[in-house]
Length: 137
Image 1 (cartoon, rainbow, N blue to C red):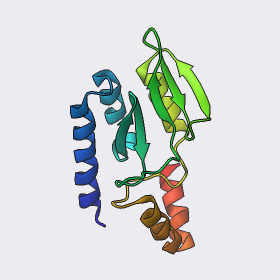
Image 2: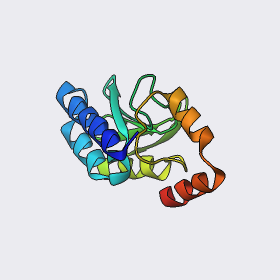
Image 3: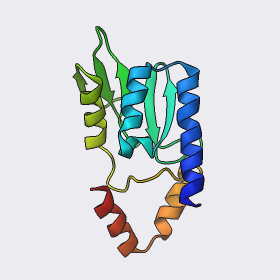
Image 4: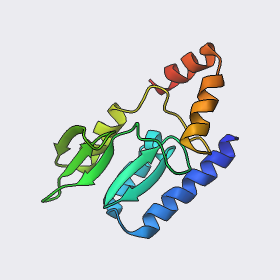
């Protein structure tokens, strides 16, 4: 996997999410403006905006996701559906909640499945893992 191929696949994902119309443009714009989220693969479900560390389904479930609330509020949930992070009044606040809870090994999305990502990460030398974590922190 090259960074260029990851960038083009992720960018296509952002374009697809924007085109599907399930998530408010205001939320998409704010998420895309945040470099740490823009490098992740976005996907939607039931009006929710999710972020994955890989580009192919079943996607990763280790990053909180955003759900529009009532009266212009936003919920940050997850990463699992049973986990609640918080409800806030603005798009900027909900983006900050998600960014604050990114996994330590979170970088540019991996082109492939969650299983391929796990296999790739398992082969990294410990020094590379440490460097990746330091860069994402």
